[in-house]
Image (cartoon, rainbow over all chains, first blue to last red; front, side, top):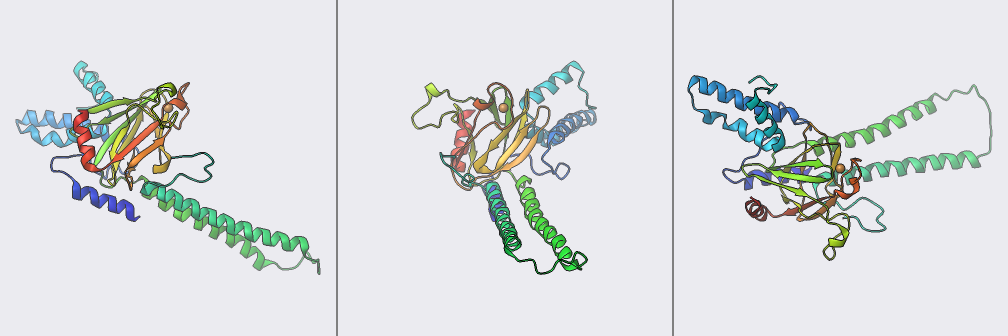
Length: 93
Length: 228
Ligand SMILES: [Cu+2]
């Protein structure tokens, strides 16, 4: 598969500084990425909570935010945000 | 894109479709070989004169052969098939992630890698069609992607099942509510590629086409900033 590897090399070469998209994640190697999106959403708000408790820099959590922003449909994020606001979000944050 | 009196697959415009064409040709070749051998046997059996008729005769070698031959044929079909399958679904190092969401009856596209671009893509009705645009295939807002780069397409649906498909790019992903399906999307040249919703989704299932416009990277970046 020359063409795929060529395309892959191309993308790392041309990648702009500051341009980001969720990279390959060994935990979610298959077509189904539902869990990848959800896990990163959870991890972001868990990270925020823990960092705030410890009084540490929340900047470290940005990674999770970028990843779930890349993968999750905006409607899902809005729905979960709304659920967290009302305290009915099913995940453990 | 498809044309009238077309017999075979659409021309490949990306690595995934090249795999499909390769597999198609490979299996077709095997089929021709098998047909030829069977035709040969059949002709011999029909035209031969029976010289001896002993049902107790040992035919172990023949039995071994007609067991081994189908096994070989199956292996020769399965191996390239599995190879193509895995090459076509692996997302290696995408440049950008594009989300396609199926609705009754239009597609919505989102670009949220540091940008906030989201738009709906409706079919253009026949009476509003610009010159030379294909009927029932052109949309009012095409999905733009960079050519010659790997892109990740994440497909889902908001109401019922849909399917996001572009034949010339060799891609067809089920759009399932509550589930995200990703596949790599790559073109080997710039161009406009057409597809249709490929899962029965209701009254206007035939009228929610997919149009992908592959452009050079700098044009893509420009387009993204103007869309915002
Ligand atoms: Cu549909």
